[in-house]
Length: 92
Image (cartoon, rainbow, N blue to C red; front, side, top):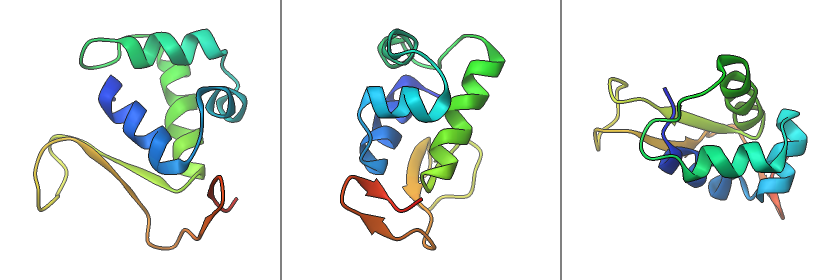
């Protein structure tokens, strides 16, 4: 499950704008905008959600679920330690 706040934070952490995330995920910009404007957990097509998760994972972003081990607790995002940051986001 992915929340709208997580999606916005993950995209910012990866240094991607909505257009870049749309291109990387194969979705449209309006789809990304609708997902980010959702209230709470994003509801939608499972295939579209998986495309977003895959694109963020390839950009080096880990999504942290409510039940995942995290010292701060709750949902969140973080960069994997093996990802090198470059201008405009993580290296591909």
